[in-house]
Amino acid sequence: MTEDDPTDEISQIEDRIERLAEIAERCRKYILASKIAIGGGGALLLITILGLFGAGVTAALGSIALVLGGIVSLGSNVSTLRQTDDAISAAEARRAALIGTIDLRVVADAPMKLM
Image (cartoon, rainbow, N blue to C red; front, side, top):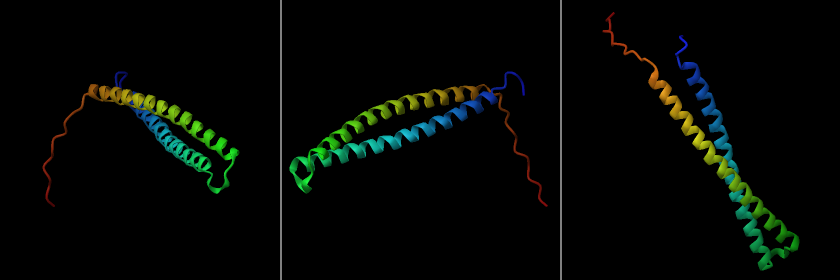
């Protein structure tokens, strides 16, 4: 390997892409949980407002907190996911550029020997 050989850097970029992909997947899970919290909090608030199941003020406050917490978590994770996707795209572009600099050689097809 020479100093100009980009294989080490390509390997490091691929490791970074893998780590970023894990972060993105985690963000997607939190986004789903946030949406569930918002929906559940909204449903509980509706039940409380309609007076079903004898839910009281505590349930109403809890449902409002659940909705607000879900909104905050959703916004935070959507932002992080966008940044992570941008970082993945940049890393993939850099990796493609490095792969393009490698002097690849074509291996000719050798005739098959019959036994």
